[in-house]
Amino acid sequence: MIENNETIDEFLARHADEVEEAVRKAAALEIMPRWRRLAAHEVDEKAGPHDLVTDADRKAELYLTEVLAALLPGSVVVGEEAVHDNPASYEAIRGEAPVWIIDPVDGTRQFVHGDPGFCTLVALAHHGVVHASWTYAPADDRLATAVRGRGAFLNGERLYAGPPEPGRDLRVATSHPDYTTDEQKQVLLGLRTPGLAPRSCGSAGLEYLAVAQGESDATAFSWEAAWDHAAGILLVEEAGGTHLTRSGEPFRITGGNELPFTAARDAATARQVVALLSGGA
Figure 1 (cartoon, rainbow, N blue to C red):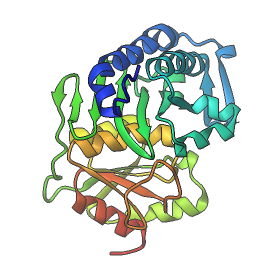
Figure 2: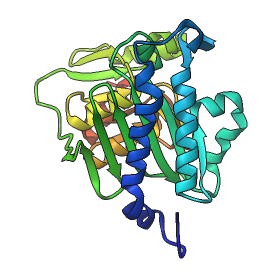
Figure 3: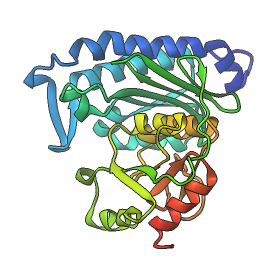
């Protein structure tokens, strides 16, 4: 718990390992025992056939909500599934209290299909600033962490995105067609140009990790739900990358962004992607 009016940074210095333990335990207790073992009654649709939720999503979020709120008294939790049940709870991201932002299973469709491309995302933010993030891919036990000003790490090894290799097509993960409007699809067509190799994204959290690792060059996402982006944008930042919206400003987890936006390995790549999304050359 926060003691003697300590700052968020001081809290993280004392408790980051406990957050990591909570993320790992949520996966071990509630997610992995259900992977490739889901019964039909454990999977439901939310907004449609491409918007799925499982018992693993619900139970992992409940576990993390209880543990993290107790770890940081006075904090609040914004979780994807809780917001689905009570949309007004999303407003806590703009409030005065420190906020845990949780996506218990990012890539639920992959999880349901037995694919390993899913992860658990947790971020700690305050006044719209993301201070720390945890991206855990339990199927292959990869944990990426970032603390603002202290770097990004994958299983303890420092991450450095670095600039893209000169002369090679830029690899850009874009919003999946199943989740985009006709207008958004039209904007994303700007990336279908020589020098770029766009493809539909999988788990947003793992796409951010790929950028932070330098395995992908950029993203182009057309939605702004904070649980999909908060952990990843800090991970990319701390690996030396950046993020940019069509307005030329950084992405804000509090909303009101001009979409689509990009997270990229370096500033030049971010500017190039945004120019193409904006109809520029």
